Length: 101
Image (cartoon, rainbow, N blue to C red; front, side, top):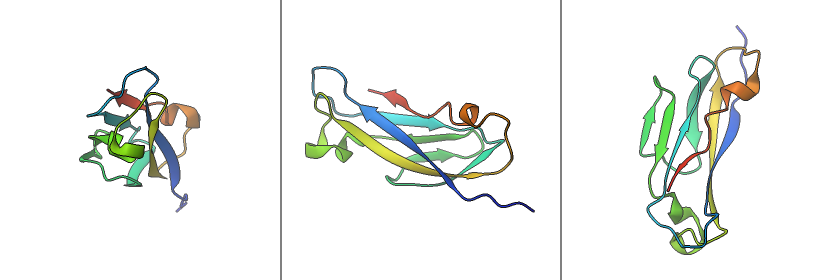
């Protein structure tokens, strides 16, 4: 049996506007055919391993001052385990970075 080391992906919530935002949620997805959720640098509020969804609420608390001011971002490092070989690694990670202001 082959064993692959865990891989990491990055989820970002960035404020590219000109107004401070709060109550920022982030949902990342992954293809469960190829990947399995292991852990994240910020605890998610829900993990749907069967559906390949990880969800965080209020990620603005990771930014300086606890709000996302213009130009700031919140970063979450997600660790996933490879479960199968894929012909296109970029396709597997395509769902990351679904930012919901």
